[in-house]
Length: 337
Image 1 (cartoon, one colour):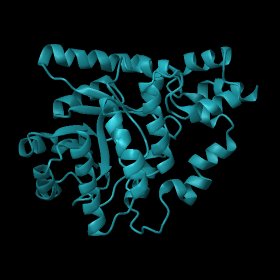
Image 2 (cartoon, rainbow, N blue to C red; image 1 turned 90 degrees about the vertical axis):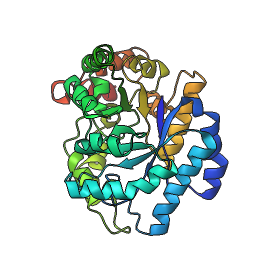
Image 3 (cartoon, one colour; image 1 turned 60 degrees about the horizontal axis):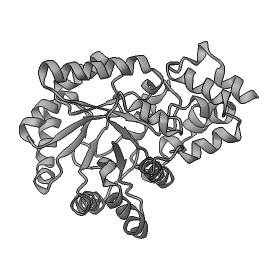
Image 4 (cartoon, rainbow, N blue to C red; image 1 turned 45 degrees about the horizontal axis):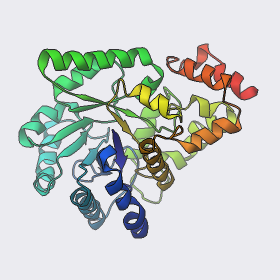
């Protein structure tokens, strides 16, 4: 149901007092716990966290294995650097360095390199593979292609939450694969995004982070590029920016509607404690069958009058707007009221 991150910056007190007890209590809703894994050739990833010390890399792996042992929830090692070439030398290097982790019990992998999946399944037959959010699938044909390449879970593009017609196609393709070829591949959607739909600089954002080597230099979201050219500038200048961000509405019924098409929601917080805590609240609210899951977004919408008829108008539009803001000004109009 939910794919939840492990944040390496959690204090010992928060890990033992909040995070681990939460995982034990809500494990029935957790598909996996994904975590940053640093082994060659993946020495950096798209989130931008620099983890240099060997002991820190080892600590993260040990912490993930401890979580898996204590809770019974599978952990998922993330390898998502777009700067790593899919050449055979890197494949052999990865196989060599992943073997010890496989023996220790890490049997889930988020792998950006689609070229490698069938070979990795041969070397690691117990492994379960998820595609990377850095190269998300955005149509039914590509979903089928990824399934046939060997992925067990396909991460689809976040903007598809605003393209219900294509989500229906993907669900249909998934059923067809099951019926005709006996292949069951799940669909995962990133639910708690902070970016506008169809962001024009998303790939540059990822490249900036994977080439960042100095732990004291800013990640993309704290960089001048973000502050003055993209995300934060748009947020400062566009009053309707929060309505255009490609994340799920805060109400549970909208999450339930999307569960007709997807099997798992991926939640944010791998490098941000605040986002992680919000993800925990979303899961807790879901389990309690609360009307509102994301209390932060709900508060924003309420404060800006997005309720009643305006709320229904907005929800109806974004179900299939495909983030084509050039041809629509509904979000701008709603925020002007």
